[in-house]
Image (cartoon, rainbow, N blue to C red; front, side):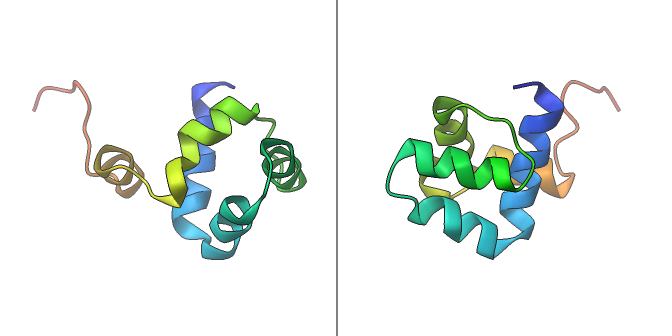
Length: 75
């Protein structure tokens, strides 16, 4: 999955609690993959597991979604 799609998935998880809940409620990786596909994300089960990680975003992911991580840009 391209990085821009991963970023879009993470942003969607952070901004759409119903979408995040539906993914975390999925009983199999295939169900989660189907739900993601219904929302326009072409993601493998392993990529989805990495992005959702128990439905919680890591502090680093949350900072990136919120625009708080400038990466390697020198100021």
